[in-house]
Image 1: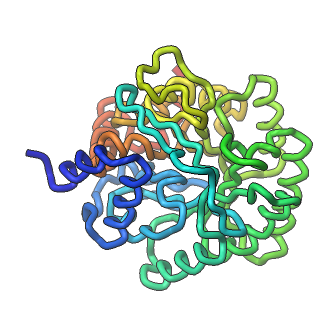
Image 2: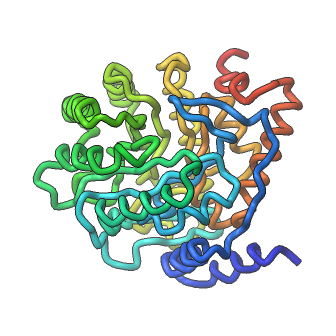
Image 3: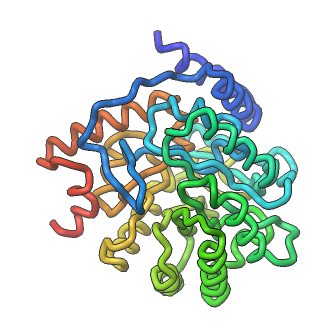
Length: 355
């Protein structure tokens, strides 16, 4: 028989996807999740864009949009947390149903539309958490523009002002396929202007959290190269690769395969890895990369690290593998690094490009 948390995960998977996710967050916020002890795995310890990460495994944005379960998430054993996406004003998101499990494919499709409680309430929750646990894990805030905003660039500036003093890093999500204004900054000139304004806002705010740009996997190579040149020229501290995809591989078996929205999980693994490799080669490993998409094992995480990721993030994998996945990934990753003769994870980042 599995642990109580594995059993609970099986029960939740019989509920509608969004309902189950809500119950999982309530459980974590009530302290009912796993309580993993800190690991003594110095092989996984690293510093990246000015922050220290005891291990490279994080929970990605979308899992805790409203920062209601930060304390519970810190106990899952990961090395960092990202909450959001958060918009300046509260936003209801798209009509339900808007989240679908593709169980035969170990995947999900969402068209949530950045439903969240808004920056003011989320900031209060983050501040309350930091007051209780000032030595918490590195914390990122995923930022997004309101769907109806007449000036989405100003939305991002307002979010930097709001969250700059309480966040370790801020993710500029310019690649969401599920809302108006979600991808307007994938236009190169618009992105260049946005980053210039954000850097100016960060300089004048007095707080300088790291900035992370999150991109979509559906970009053509020439478009991707142009965006990467803009991002690196602007001095962005890291790049998150990648968001969900609107593509539908022919291998999908689920009856939900043609639902509108962004596809995540196992079918995204190879697509996201290909993008990761392109960006690592393009940047020469000079910009830290966060690998996201289809991770369900330590071997998957190791593949992304060897392809160029400094850090990795999970979400859909937790739905199918349960909360113990993070611990399994860490221990398997440590063993894989030792097997290949690495003393520390930093030595393995991008190693396949040097082979």
